[in-house]
Image 1 (cartoon, rainbow, N blue to C red):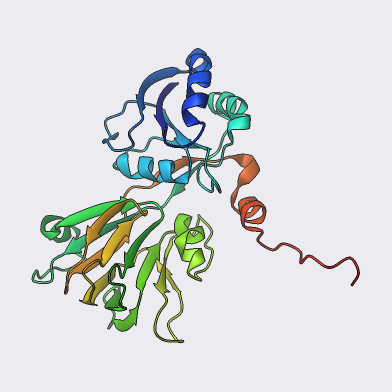
Image 2 (tube, rainbow, N blue to C red):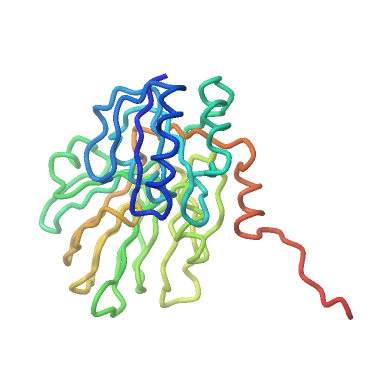
Amino acid sequence: MKLFIIANRKKPNVGKALDEWLPWIKTQVDVVGMDTDARGDISHVNADTILALGGDGTLLSAARRLGGKPVPVMGVNFGRLGFLASFSPENFKQALADLVAGKLPITSRMMLDASVIGGDVNCDPHDAGQVASLRRWHASALNDAVITAGPPFHMIEMELHADGDGGVRFVGDGVIVCTPSGSTAYNLSAGGPIIDPGVDAFCITPICPHTLSFRPVVVSSRNIVTIMASKVNAGTTLFCDGQDAAKLALGDKVIVCRSPNDLRLIENPATLQWRNLADKLNWAATPRYNAND
């Protein structure tokens, strides 16, 4: 097996663990390269597996930088929650042995593409070729595309269309368009629903809307979601997975669609979706009663 290692040495203990593990790893697999800056293009990497040491952010970065190349990614969590990077340092050696033996499941995780089109440009959002030729900025994301109000933090106004419908206008602090993988991230904190990773859908969740009637909406991933910036702040920004960013100007259109490329994610059989929710977010936990009640 050819293995390429991404190590986020900014995370505590990652560097120490890598130095300790590397001699042993080389006895198990062929290490074909290593990345420690989390910035460069890795779509050229000739490997059977990507090993990401860090946390969910490290894995999200790897997913985008792969550029659609279908190389499975295995994440080892040195951070906090570890929803996507689901393997622990304590069990890493057994997990790698299971990987080499072909015992670990690999799932496809839907990704999204976000493009920014200038307000003075006429573009059909359903024409992928036209969007690609006219956009001034583009990024892919495994979790979400998020528009935030930004400094000076006045509410902004947006016009939202899903698959060419009449659209709605709303005022608030922004909007989240997330994949099922991203439904347990910012979307969940903003009151959006949890979506099983196997569902082909986007969730559109407003951030602090100035209305009681705009609730999160789940739509098919076949939809093209278009958001026009009708009123913005100087700091209004589009973020993809909280890492790639583009400033938005008045009239700009953000076009979000399903990426043609999924991420192939190596899953930990001991921490699949529902177990993760229960263990890490206390989902469906029994209330704690006072012993004297």
